[in-house]
Image 1 (cartoon, helix red, strand yellow):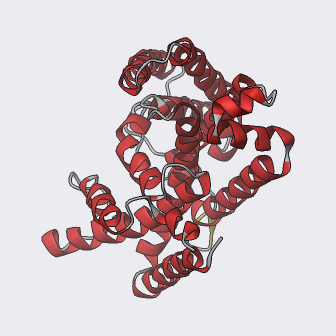
Image 2: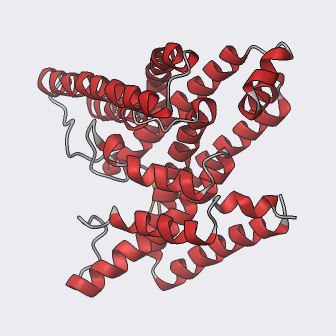
Image 3: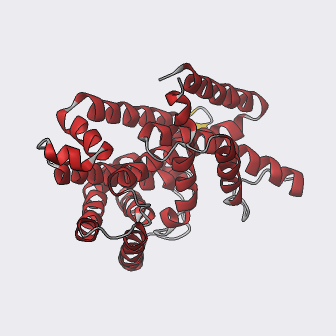
Length: 322
């Protein structure tokens, strides 16, 4: 990467350090939120790279992890960090099912609007299944599946919630794993070639369909696990991922929409903007530092609009400057 993008990273780190000195609570909240958002944004970008269409069912796939964590943690006392792992095959299956739903339409050369509407239809179906399952488990197993948080199930280091430590570590592990996959494996290199030029990749004998399928599997795994981790930060329900979709898109767009690592950087940028602003605006308006606000979702959208005025291709465009 060029020096410019490291300047952005340094600015983000310095900004969080300043927030930590000014308000440790706000800084830790921002770290937790940004870390989970980064995992989800990287997953969304993986699906966009293959079809070049926004995946509006991404939030529903996250809901698989959210519901699994809610049920297993309350029923069996399994930590959300571990119950999120249990959710992985189910969230991957949901992502693969969507891929095979879109694949025939994609092969026929359908317009991006048609593909986007197909993902929205799948989103409605999957959310319906998740909400039906939430009602079943809520009544049969006497667990809370709506408007509930698993913060009490998290570990603590002194007075610091575990997600503030585990979140960045998990995100770094995810980023490193993606780097190894994309740049150090034959399948990852094939995927990058297929994303760059699908027809040329096919002519070179690359199994593009297999490469794209793996991308959707990886995206499903990351989406499901991020959905489970959000139970440690928000009061959640099966629809929470869908309600967070605008924030996830914002992070991916700010990151450039064509780089999973840009999406991670964009998520930390958005967290840097959203969490402190949401807290400080609320403090100015009400005198109380509330984090959950009706107008909080507006803040990342404003940040996206302003950042794209300066960098139309996102933060990763800095790395491409000569």
